Image 1 (cartoon, helix red, strand yellow):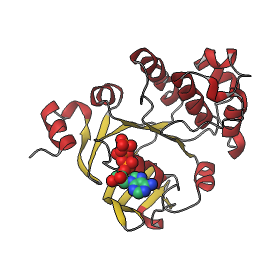
Image 2 (cartoon, rainbow, N blue to C red):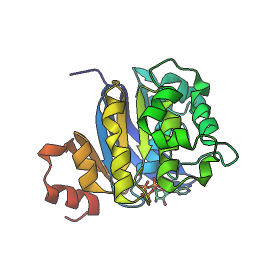
Image 3 (tube, helix red, strand yellow):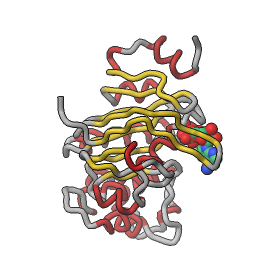
Length: 235
Ligand code: ATP
């Protein structure tokens, strides 16, 4: 078996006194596409934030390429090659599309992704490159957020609910880009509310429920019933 790129063991996370994650174990191999599913409030965003330094994690709970990185500052984690596309896109409102994309390259990692490649993947962004990022449609803003994260040339990209609030045709367009991304050997984690979509595009999935992993395994080996039970917590 390939050595894990990312290995998470017994991860707990808190917001003040409120505990949101209770001992999560999670693994990601190089080039793998893994989905994380779960109902609202299950802890999906908190997991991604804990892995990227936005929510505090104990140092030893998160290993990246064999090194303990839990609790490092977000910038340091991006420089090591682990990037996040945050929920809600979070573009810089005063910057153009192109400036937003260039913000992603500040980590100065070498790799295949640059403005030209992003524009090839999403040509509409080249047409609108001088417009303020936040003036674009929701789907186009999601393309900018994805492109910005790719500009840091990560080895693993964590995507938080890319499809949230988007029309099916736009979701399809964004997910069609995934093979181009993993084709470069990059590992991807996608958080998705749409379970069928998650199962279609990924090989393995984790289901979270109330801050715990309620189910995990290869998508093809998991039945619809099993997934529904783990998702909704029905015994
Ligand atoms: P959603 O699909 O709604 O984004 P999620 O699975 O991503 O849900 P999280 O956002 O990770 O879930 O939330 C996990 C738990 O942590 C929930 O109980 C939520 O209320 C709580 N939580 C999340 N963010 C905060 C915060 N900033 N302060 C306090 N509690 C929070």
